[in-house]
Length: 293
Image 1 (spheres, helix red, strand yellow):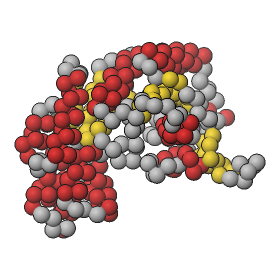
Image 2: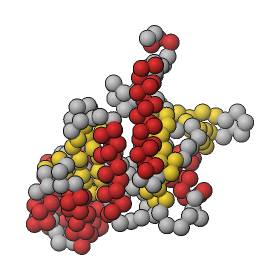
Image 3: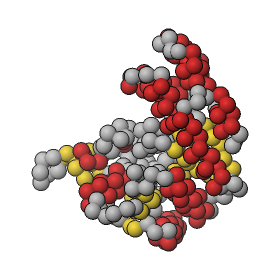
Image 4: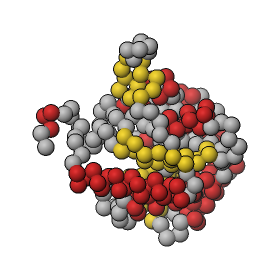
């Protein structure tokens, strides 16, 4: 392949790989359809203000922006299909009563790759559920995610779980302002336990809340983390509810290898509660499911 003809991290897909990709796409869409998810096909390009929502500030770094020669307005080439599907649900399917199950599969274009070995024009396939707040919705999507990875023949899968609701509950109870919450979230992302302890000490938080925040980065491991967290975190109803949701997911997948990390806080990717991702042992890739309410 003469890569000099194309931009960096952009490549032609030749027949063998093209057949494999199209076969995987067809199988995934068939799986989604069997489970009641309806296909939508958003456009490759939209006005930038509708693509770059406040939900994911990091998306702006991935989105290629151009000027529309017809209107003079700024357009964005999609770097993620999820905001488009959310727009379709909110504005075009809002008259539907009850639950909307939508799926999609199509290319996205990134201004810069996610990693040195990643391409800038990946195929994104996914399913979204709208209008159902019960934990059963998350369990349904996790099951769909695991079945999707089985179709892709990724071998043994590790299911990773977290819950942003625990941090939110502690933050509200400790009366942290938005800036303090953002600071702690960044430190949690870095898994810097020492920095978390130093920060809460500098803020002179009440001992119970300081201890709870310092504990979160240490609460990771297998299913036993949940009972450990119940015994060591403050007795808040929101914390208990979050742990109940995590337990429900663990119970729903008794044969699946599960890793729980209560400081895994992906706050910029449409998450408000339960967090889940699946990591393939055979490949350095992951699948991720999301549920929108």
